[in-house]
Amino acid sequence: MTMRALLCPLLAALAFVAAPAAAQAQGSPRAVPLKATPEALTLAAELSRITNDQAEVLAMLDVALDGSLPKALAADSTFQELEKLYPGIGAEFIGVMKPIIREYLIQEWPEYQRRSAEIYAKWLTPADLRVAIAFYSSPTGLKLRAAVAEGADFTELFSEQIASLGEAEITAKDLEKSLDPAIDKAASSLTPAERLEVMRFVRKVGPQKLARSNAEIMQMAAGWSSEMDPETEQKIEEAVLAMMARRMSGEKPQ
Image 1 (cartoon, helix red, strand yellow):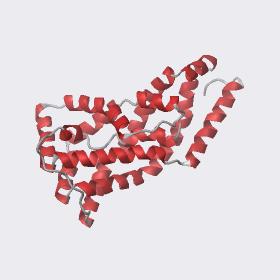
Image 2 (spheres, rainbow, N blue to C red):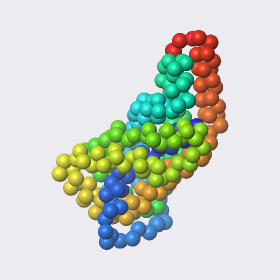
Image 3 (cartoon, rainbow, N blue to C red):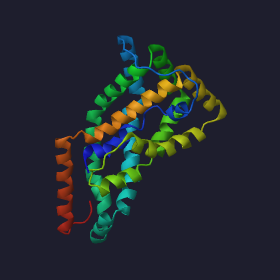
């Protein structure tokens, strides 16, 4: 399994959560790409910092690696046999990878924020960006982002990657399938007043603009699965092999 294949589901999860509702809107003006101005790029960078908060994505990393990945490993026949031979090896496998993935994610996150900002500036005007910044900084925006991050389930996506040894292509559709239930659940948790606030935000910025920017961010995140990081891949491989050597020598789980 490639490093990017593990990280890819995490990278898309904090995109515009209003986009599914926005995409269903009818009769709104067609979105067209914009030539980003310095003002738009500055505002887009601020929006990206808010919607792609590092602390939130690290919390999502915990949800994915402590929740989704163990379920995917437990369902895999190879790991089932390994677990019989070496009880607790699945948890130890995740345990040796987690600090390496966390370190890598912290290192790479500014680049992800930069790419997201470029997409925001491509589809949203400075006025749109100010509205989005205000919404995603509001209690309702914070509530939506937290609910999506906590509720995302990547079990199926991880299972496909395990079965293909990381060779299966990850698409934006795959990410949407992992995130849509969490988005729907987050939306259903809103009060009537909060739902009205979301509707006002979507209407003010424009549903097509939000849908296009969200779709492009999903595509960008999915594309990361093909960008290899040999150094981090090697660190994970060495850590896993060392762990396997310890267990095969009879050493108990750490």
